[in-house]
Length: 152
Length: 152
Image (tube, rainbow over all chains, first blue to last red; front, side, top):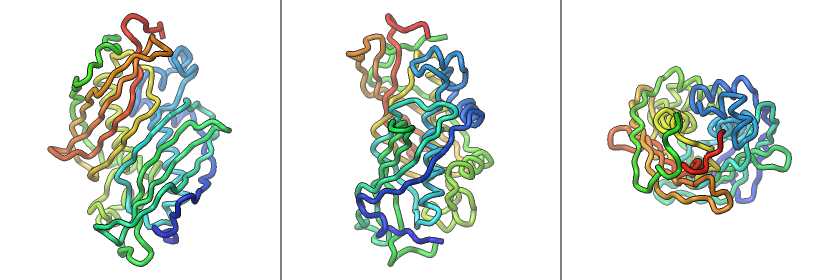
């Protein structure tokens, strides 16, 4: 059920998206398919690498965050997709077995001038391992407005 | 075999990463697991959406590009991972069956001051469907230098 519209994404609002565990088998399968660099697919190469152990592909980490965002926000939001963002960062490696806390914070929100039935919301995504940020992204989400959402 | 070091990533150099076909089953499986928004997992919802048809998750698109980059560049490069980037954009939706051309262009390159055995290379990733850009990202890759690469 849609209950979150553009108007609900007010700057400063933080959504706790819960925790996500990094499954080793899935992390490896993802890396073998999309990012088969040695330190993402081989334990020994991971140990010898700058990361010190087998590390997750950054795209897997981003995708794990995305799922928490869909489950925690988008599933009940008038989401119209995203044109992209201005920051994506992996400040620390992610390892198999990690438990990460996901969050999303609203940074800015403005109604589209050319298409007033939607609004653009600048968001900060994050995944934390304890106090350490392992993923951060600032991007724009498009949302239908409460008064003008299409029937789609 | 490693043949591409930091010194080989000179600003302006373009790497053609070949083409990639968007497989419908894989696109759907990815969306169901990581980005189950209706327009990514359901044909009817896709048709009714802003995209006009079932559209790929942007993270799937990014991951498809990544694989072309690993195959075309990183598999023979002294890659040390990426701390992140400053742009990620999905200017047009990606559909099942699309054939996309992948490329990477070197924008800037500088040796690390604190760790002279590695260099930071700012890259522009892109996926094109004909003349239309469907994915673009500007991010930093870290590469070992020809004279100082560690044995890892």
